[in-house]
Length: 103
Image (cartoon, rainbow, N blue to C red; front, side, top):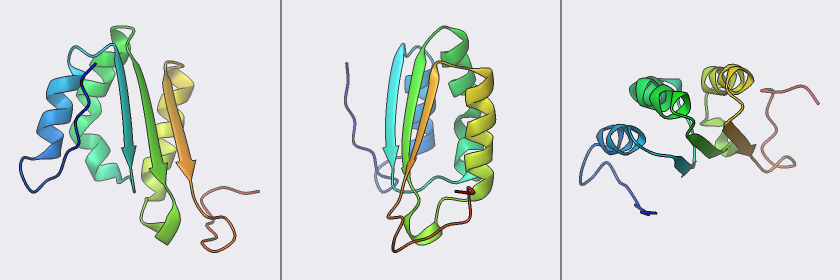
């Protein structure tokens, strides 16, 4: 298993993620926030990994309302179609209330 800490400062992250997802059996990603535009960059590679019975786990934050609702809805729909995708959102419920989900 390879662990990589990525930054757009040294190389476009989308390129590395797409390259690694092509043949991945297990992929785990943690990001501070998630944008739909970023998911579109890796959409085909995620699909290929999942179609090849790979598993993907993505953890993202909700604080500061930087994760956009479109990305969350996209991930929920993808999870419903693909059980080997796990998606987690975390946020400080008391200080950063969000209306992404009803309680």
